[in-house]
Structure formats: C-alpha cells, structure tokens
Amino acid sequence: MKELEKYIKDGITIRKTDHGYNVFTIPTQHFEVESLDMLTVEAFEEAIKNQLDLEDLQAELIAEKFKRLSAEEIIKILDDNMDETEFAHYYDYEKMTKLLGESEEVFNGSDEGDIIIVRYFKEHGVYIMVEGWAMSSYDFEFDSGFIEVIPEHKVKKTFKIKQKDNKPPEDLPF
Image (tube, rainbow, N blue to C red; front, top):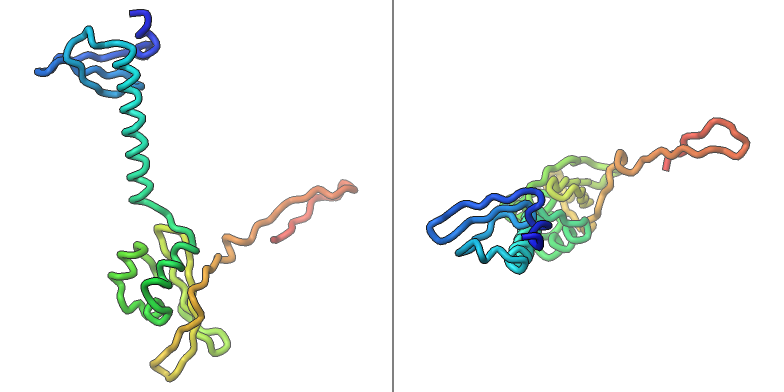
C-alpha cells in the first residue's frame, strides 16, 4: 500500500459497480478496475497517462473550435475565396460567416475620393480594410487588396522614461 501513497495522498473514492470498481483520485480522475487487487502502481500510472491524453485532446478540440486566426491567415482565406468588392458589399454574408465567423462593418466612408470599408472579425480580434472608388453614384470598385488595420487606440501607447538629470518623466507617445 505504501507504493500507492503518492497516488492517493489527496484522497481516493472507490465505488462498487456491476463490472468491478470505479476509482477516483485527483490525478487520475475516474478509471475502472475489475477487482481491488488491480490497484497497482501500473494501473495508476496508466490512468494518469489516459487522463493527460484526454486533457490534451480536449485542449486541441477547444483550440480548434475557438481558433483565433492572424490577420495574415484571414487575408489568405479572403484572397482564396472572394474579391474585394464581394467583401466590401458583403454580397455573401453566409459564405463570409462560414469562413471566418461573425464580422461587422466598423467603418464605411470616403477619403479624398476613395471609398474605405473596414470589417472587424470579432472571433479573431482583427480588422481588415479594402479601398475602392466610385464608378458612378451607385457602383463602386474595390481592388486594393485586403489590408490589416490596427485601430489607433490599440497602437498608441505611452511610455514613461526617467531622464538622467532627475527631471520628471515625460510622456512619449509611440
């Protein structure tokens, strides 16, 4: 029993089942044995390994489900699946949502004759922009390519520095 101490030091629960015993410890979680004499160092080590494998698999599945794509990955997906005009006019909402999750248009305006559209991909925390121009009052052409945009509030940082002559620190916007 002494060799099992490290496995059961935080407690153990053993419950009789129709097929043997259900054993629970913190490192192993639940595992099954047919008889109590099967509670060996090897059985605990195998149960710990199985639990760690299960946790790794769960982590992979969660990461896949909630994978955050980088701006480069989003731009590659957009390049492969739609043109800038489709993106700007959101012609195929279902297609874009299926590819990249929910997005919202956060800017639609003009700058010196150019039309600028910015979409925020919520699940990924990424802003993508396209630029175009008006061909008529109702028709716009976009061909700038997909461009990552980093909002000003995420770029501006203020750093404090201490000057050598012991003057008060200055704010330096970067």
